[in-house]
Amino acid sequence: MADKKAKTSLTQSVARNLLIIYLISLAVLGTAVYLYGKKQVLNEARSKLRLLNGMAIAIHDVVKSELQPHFLKKGEFYPPVISSTVLLKLASEKFLERHPDYLVRVISDNPLDPNDLPRGEEQAILDAVRRENRGLIRTLKVSQNTYMVHAQPIVAEKECMICHYSPESAPRFIVEQYGTKSGYGWKIGEVVGATLVGVQLAPVLTIAFVRTMILAVILGAFFGVIFFAINSFLRRQVVTPVVELTEAAQQISHGKVDKELKTDRTDEIGDLYRAIELLRRSIQVALSRLKR
Image (cartoon, rainbow, N blue to C red; front, side, top):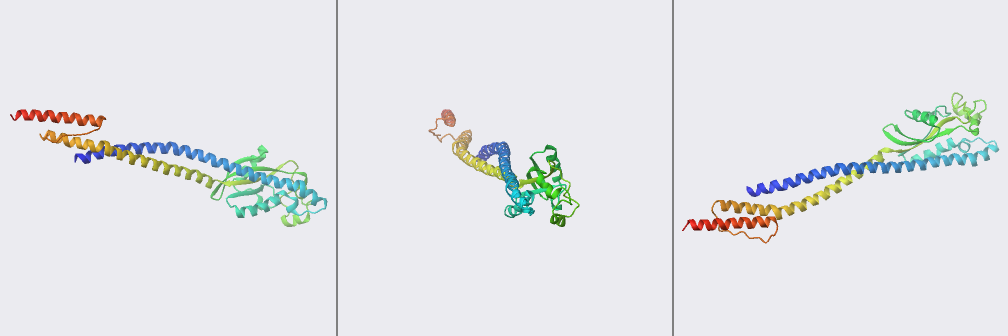
C-alpha cells in the first residue's frame, strides 16, 4: 500500500507539473510560431502578388510600346494585339487553368464586356483604387474563398479612345460584339477600372497552422522524452529508496530491528538511510538492555 502510494504521489506530481509546463510552452511558442509563420507566408503571398502584378504591367507595356504602334499604323484593330486588357484576360485564362488558386480579374464599372463589371466586394476595391489612384493590397472574398488581392488602376489613355470614346467612333466589330450601351464615354487620364491579381489565403493560413501543429508534435515528443527520463530517474533514485526506507521504519516501529540498512549513496537519501540505520541500532541496543 505504501509502495503504491509513494509511487503514485511522486510520479503524478511530476507528470502534472510537466503537463502544465508543456501547455504553457505550447500556448506561448505555438502562438509565436503561428503569428510568425502567418507573417512569413503572407509576405510570400505579397511577393507573388508583386510578381503577378509585374507581369500584368509588362503585358500592358508590351502592347503599348510594341503592338499598338505596329498594328494601328496599318489600321488594324484586332483587340488581342492592340488592347492590353484583352490580352491580359486571354493570358490569365490560360494561367488560371494551370494555377486555379490564383485570381486574375479586369474590372470596370463602365466596360464593353459585361463580364468585367465588378462583383460583390470588387466595387469597393475599385472605388478605393479610384480615390487613391495607385496600387492597393486588399482582401477579397469570392464565393467560399478569400484572396489577398493587388489592385492596379487602369487609366484611360489616348489609344483607349479608339474603342471607348463613343459608339460612333468605335470600330464596327466592337459595336457589333458589345453593343452601344456600355464601355463608352471614357476620358483620358480617368481611372476607368482596375486589374486584380490575387493569391488564395486559405493555403497561406493552412501553412501557418500546419507549422504550429508540427511544433506541438515536437514539443510533445520533447516533453515525453523528458517525462520518461525524469520518471525513470525518480523511480530509481527516489521512489524505490523512499519505499524501502518506509518499510524499514514500519518494521522498526513493530520492534523488528535485525535487518541492517546499507547504502553507498552520499546524497540526502544516503543521509536518511544512515539516520534510520542509527535509529535502528539505538532501538536494538535499548531492546537488548531491556531483555537483560
